[in-house]
Image 1 (tube, helix red, strand yellow):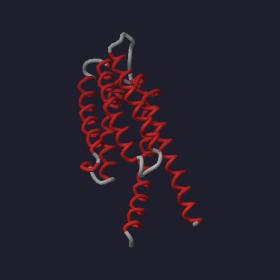
Image 2 (cartoon, rainbow, N blue to C red; image 1 turned 90 degrees about the horizontal axis):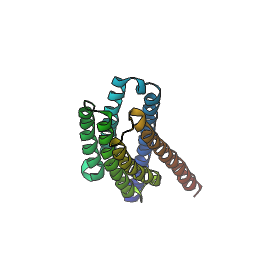
Image 3 (cartoon, one colour; image 1 turned 90 degrees about the vertical axis):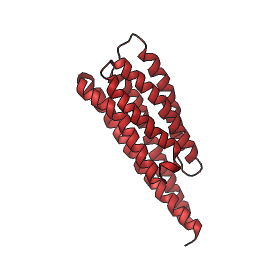
Image 4 (cartoon, rainbow, N blue to C red; image 1 turned 120 degrees about the horizontal axis):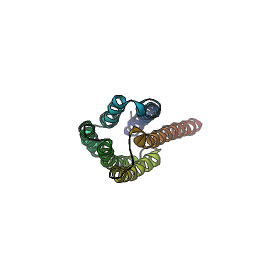
Length: 196
């Protein structure tokens, strides 16, 4: 088997993984948003668990994705994302003992860093896989949301899990777009290769 054929098979396998990964992240975020709006806003303990769980899930998801694509050593931006998200989950647990404003401040700092790392990961993958424009937009919007969260955390308005939920909803949307775009792109490539 030629090296070109092996590279093509590896690219196909990774593309298949990315579709599953993006769909999974969309599903998690969509469910998280639904529970936040319909149940957790009036259930402080559930809200606390979910606010801790969101960055913890991000750390796990980035770890698994990096492992499926050559390991953390070859995916430095995801390694950094794993570290920052893990620290954030711990920081959220601590901040929950203080106030929701403190939690929102922690989320803001995390959203900023996580957005930058996600954007950098997407740029690195740009030449190999489709749909990275959605991930770049998502990363940029996450960084902007982080700035807004930090600003809101210092303000007088009451904040809660429903303050964070729209951020998660936009993340879900971008993961869905990326998954669908990759699916359509792969189908077109398959059709073209079958026709030749």
